[in-house]
Length: 212
Image 1 (cartoon, rainbow, N blue to C red):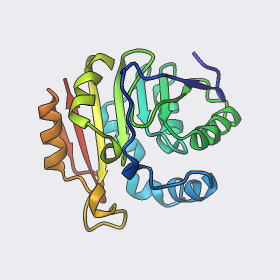
Image 2 (cartoon, rainbow, N blue to C red):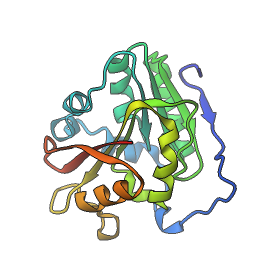
Image 3 (tube, rainbow, N blue to C red):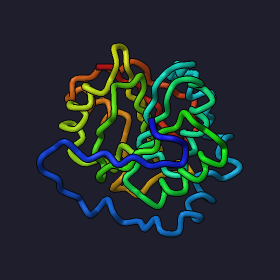
C-alpha cells in the first residue's frame, strides 16, 4: 500500500486506448479554482456525504474506490468512515492528484491510496466493496463495455454507486453531459447489473446503487 502523499500509476490492461476529446474540455492546471468549487463550505449541506455513506452501507474495514476523486471531497471523508479499510482515490488528472497527495499527507490519512489512471480507465489493485462515481459517470466512454469488465473488481456483494446531477438544479451539467436515472439504469442493465437502490436523499442529484 502506498504511503499517504504518494501516487501510484496503474497502466490500463486493455490493448487499445483511445481518448474522446469531447471529454477533455477542461484544464485542471489551476487546481485552486476547483478546490474553491469542489470543497466549497456549503457543499456538505446539499451533498450530504455522511447520509450518502449511510445509504451505501459503508462501514469500518471496507475498501472503497472514489473514481474521479478530484480534490478528494469524498476520499477524505471516506477515510474516517472505513478506518482500517482502504480508500482508493483514483483520477486521470495529475494536478488533482498532486493536490490530493499533499492534502492526505498533511492530514496523515494513511488509509488513502492515490492512483493515477489513463483517461476513464477503471483498473484497480484489488477487488473492493464499493466503487463510487460522483458527477463522473457521464465522462466515461464505452460505458456498457467498461462496466461489464468492472465486475472483476467487485468483491462478493460489492456495489457500484452512481451519483449524477439532475436537470433543473443549481449544479445541472451542460446538456451533452446530462444523464437521466433511466439512462444510467438501462446502461447498467445492459452491462449485467441489477438496480439495488434508487435513493432520493440528495436535492440536486440522483443516487443509484447497482450490484452484479
